[in-house]
Image (cartoon, rainbow, N blue to C red; front, side, top):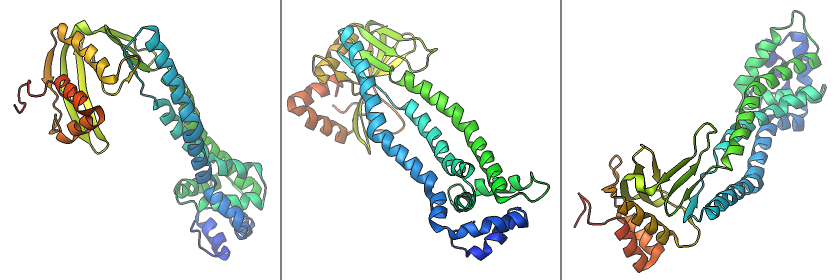
Length: 319
């Protein structure tokens, strides 16, 4: 329903969706209650954004800190060099569920209230451009359920229940999956020790990976540059087919570079093959990426970083 139509045309708009004449005439006067109609149009969006803000300000930082502490404790217990986390999958699923739950706000209010309040919110919901097609289709299906013209309250209550059920059948399983994934998420981390690599997995049926560096078969080296900045490529492949890319682990006792050098010495001693990283047409040793690490590590650290990447030593390198 268009938001800028005169209230005198509301009856015709409702009738075009299949609402019986008597019912449409009873609902139409609620169009004049502008504030409630506006409320019905925007309540789902306001609820959704408010949830996003609360999640970003309070929930996400708390859970990330919890995940970080669990990973740090695991690293300290094993006297590891670095640890890494990748938090966020569970929150992503819950974010999708929250969008659906937010969409239920207006339908819940129309169900709990009576005319003319429910009518104004109902008409505002039909004007919502983000979900208008979905809501208008449900209006037509609701009208088809009645053999005789129902009262406005009965029609809107039936419409509200239909919309709530349509949302709930997706929101409930998504919420349950999201909560389960979130519980796993805060316990998912990687630990890089002197002797090997340990991964506490996200999926409950996946086995924890504990692989010694002595089983490394090869290492892909590079410095990748994207719009988000430069990133080290130090991808270790093991004899069992597993692999791990050590990129931005948090150091425990030594510096990040010293920790990676210690791991590199163990892998070198194991006889692993070092090769230049290749992916599509990317520059495996991007000058901007290398300059960024020089700026971050300083001249001495930058030289050590280049030595770690075997600059000029691998096939295809510029001598």
